[in-house]
Image (cartoon, rainbow over all chains, first blue to last red; front, side, top):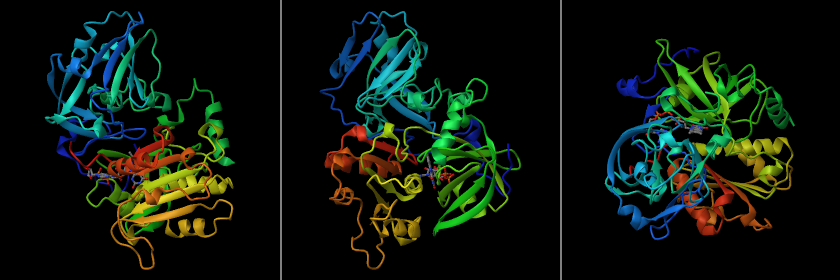
Length: 198
Length: 273
Ligand SMILES: Cc1cc2nc3c(=O)[nH]c(=O)nc-3n(C[C@H](O)[C@H](O)[C@H](O)COP(=O)(O)OP(=O)(O)OC[C@H]3O[C@@H](n4cnc5c(N)ncnc54)[C@H](O)[C@@H]3O)c2cc1C
């Protein structure tokens, strides 16, 4: 590390709880490649496509009929913003995957607008990921991925795809959108996996 | 062109042995400063081994205090590639942690760490066929002008004649970055490397400026009538999250398809929704 003469920093006492290289924000962290997508709940759907090629599709109303959970987590954006104590409501991916028969270990998440991101299946199940549709007690705003987005809080926030509309199961891992532009394939904020090779 | 050579050099180096260029911290020494507006300046850094970058990419900057405490932020690369050299233009956020040091405290000879270049999406390179040869519409809010001016400089350096327009939204005359350079670039639109520049003042308008103060409107982003196929333009929008959302909404209204719009956001959204 190079010492920068005359730099003292803010020494936020809470900073000890943050992943390396992150700092707190009271706004909402964003990393979005293009414009906000405007999708109504009438047209929204979510589809999981396993290797059998028999996709299972949920409409908005079908998703709302599934048991939902309240989720209270910190979120970490690769652009270095961390936001503490965010509240969401949504359906655990475990609930969707109960109906899916797959031996594939990798998932490609798809969004309206063409965005993709890749994750191992084990990071989506086991109470680690949700499809969320409420933020701080209100319907999720389109700017933040509404009507529904993926929430995978243990990874950098670009993995929590906004405007999510499906997951395709894959035998092998392939890079999604940001992963193809030099961002880390996995993205664990606590190991500071920001860019390829970290 | 040095830009292209530098990046090709990077791609050719044996990927197995050397880590990708963006992946290690390099010591950088401040060798030049240029004031830009009342509260921003360009810092020119000597970075031995810096191989180059594309216009639109950014660096991560790390400051470390004597007691080991450190803070990191991202800054757009403010100049087209030059070997061993990195420039950033930083706007002061009055109670911020990092920008006051970069804008007010850091002196020639002082050091920090940089890492990059980062980002391969928000880039435009003159003459790059993979990105297309349609007109280029650049829309900046505040310090979001920095990567867009780097694109304009690269275009000028390459004597590229792609029709290009910069629409730059700023609060008032004191906020204007790159003023003389933008004026020169837009003075004679028949000169090679020139570009149309529209300044959109949102709060305070300088004397003699024709447009009254207001937020960016659909009129402001209307392409020059000389552009043959305006909707075929590639659009780059950069600024705060709120500005980017506002501009993207206007582009939508004007009929630009989403897949022609690339955005870069400098901060979190202000609204806590
Ligand atoms: C890819 C990328 C490129 C960037 N390029 C540039 C550049 O070329 N020039 C430049 O000046 N800045 C740029 N930024 C912004 C820069 O990284 C810092 O966020 C900025 O300098 C403020 O840092 P700070 O430490 O002074 O303030 P902080 O201590 O981080 O901020 C204090 C508070 O102010 C608010 N805040 C901080 N930044 C912003 C903002 N931009 N908009 C709204 N609220 C904010 C936050 O809520 C924060 O809690 C870029 C950011 C990104 C992600």
